[in-house]
Length: 272
Image (cartoon, helix red, strand yellow):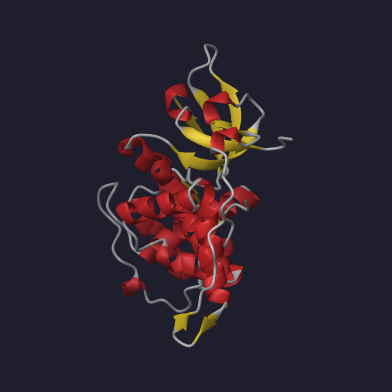
């Protein structure tokens, strides 16, 4: 599945007083506009190796003084380091926020595109708006629903297909559905070729996340790191004793214990 590379919608002529204060101790919440700057910095860092003020301004559709004001607030919030009038780099805290936002964007865009059948461009734009305003519980429930539609043997894909057929046959204000449930048995997802746990992949192998089979605490942490259904994960290397495992996710490197990786169900790339 295509990873999130979209650019947040430009905020043209945004007055400085519209940027919520993000100064103070690290960890303080920031506004949705400042979160968009974090995403932009992350994207430029991946694409160009650095996020320069002029490039941020071009991507956001604003003037450089507006960018500089936002960067200073992000620096005070502990999310970036900022070389005056030159470039910005995300701190560990900033990278964590970027991963969280990119993961939210991907799950939202996938839901809007694959379930609600919005056009890709429209789904992407709506995800850009929603990702800044949903709380963790809502995102976790939405992630669980996408998992259900992907692998549930009791009607996940059938459910989505029936809903989509309802949309296609919609008449007036109410859908006129004439769809019968499929009677064919569905294999357990683990019986499908190439489906395994992340802990079973070897260095250099990669797969797409299908489901998070973990306790609620670890599940929330994984979602906040951008590990959600459809995310591509590559095993970079194992520690000398095989634990922990270093991963490449959304352009970043993450380290998980082997026991944590054993709760992430993936579909291996290139399986026959």
